[in-house]
Image 1 (cartoon, rainbow, N blue to C red):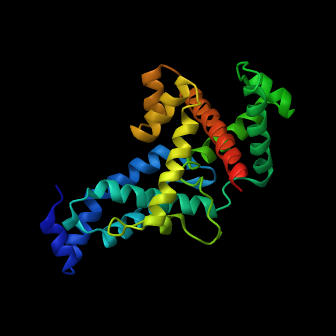
Image 2: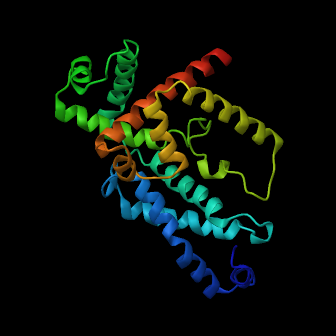
Length: 251
């Protein structure tokens, strides 16, 4: 249950109450940044920078939240914090120019190998892409990070200057059209996930629903963190292919 007295004090203009709310829920920012970052960076962005933008999302969540509705603040705030961070990532040109096209080539290579039902090995990827191991690892690292934010952003925004966080509906509002679009997207995603392998479904479930980190998932499945990242990337590449195919059919 939310601390209603603290929220009431904040609504009355208490700066002390606001500071206490930020202090109480700042751990949400660290958790979300920790799930996005492997190491101290996301692409070219430092973890400290992402934490700072996460706090901006937390402040917006505090400003918009109404505890009287009985909705859990952690759930609402986590969505806005993650949305704020992903917006910054999207607009930062965080993927080096020399890697952007290589990620698309890597996606096509995954699709090519997946069609043969053969194991997708690094040696096979290097041969198709005509790169050495060091170069492949660099491409895979950025591809993995790109895929971490894909499900949050697979419904492409029409306006490059539009913030993803502004498309997250407030819990105080219900828009029938937005709800219909959300339900359709969820149905498409559910159908696509069912086409994945059992291991891929487990990794996605543990990451997105149980909200575990790659490190925690690696301990559960007794695989390396790098292997979990690879399974996640492969699953997202396959989801992208399925969703894009559906879009082309409906257009």
